[in-house]
Amino acid sequence: MHRVSNGLSAAETKKSHEALREVLSNTFVLYVKTLNYHWHVIGPHFISYHELFKDQYEDLFEAIDLLAERVRALGHNTPSGCAQMLEYSSISESESNLSADDMIAQLVDDHFILVKIIRKNIVILEQVNDYASADMLIERLQEHEKMAWFLQSHLL
Image (cartoon, rainbow, N blue to C red; front, side, top):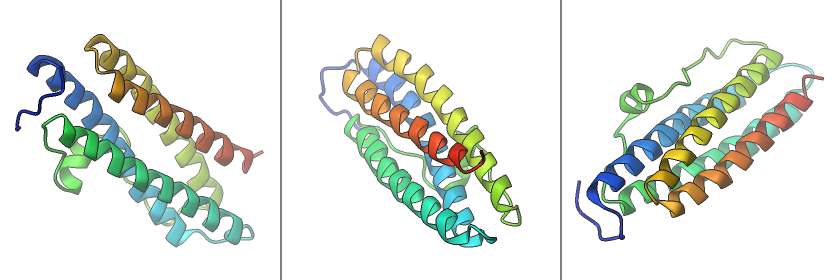
């Protein structure tokens, strides 16, 4: 860790880092899973699912970059590599030989896992006065709820 002056104490920054690391790691694993499904989806709805997964993994990639930059701005390091991302993630890797509907159902479940994690960490960030990070997670919360809705709409 390198100390960056941002008005937060070292203890507050540490808690912010831990909250953001959890969200970052889960977002990264979800990104990889969504990308994997984009590559491997087949079936009668191939084009629409392929494009839906692409839109979502592109959004997730942008979120990963913003979350990682915030961690660095707080003076901490991000997890370095897939093994560390998985270590801090509640979302697990998946196989690529699932049906398209099973892929979508899995992604819906994963987005709701992330929604729950984000809500918990917004509270933590607000408690340590890191409103910039909390605001970032509020935006991510809205995006994950929207992504889950889009995915669920394909299963109706």
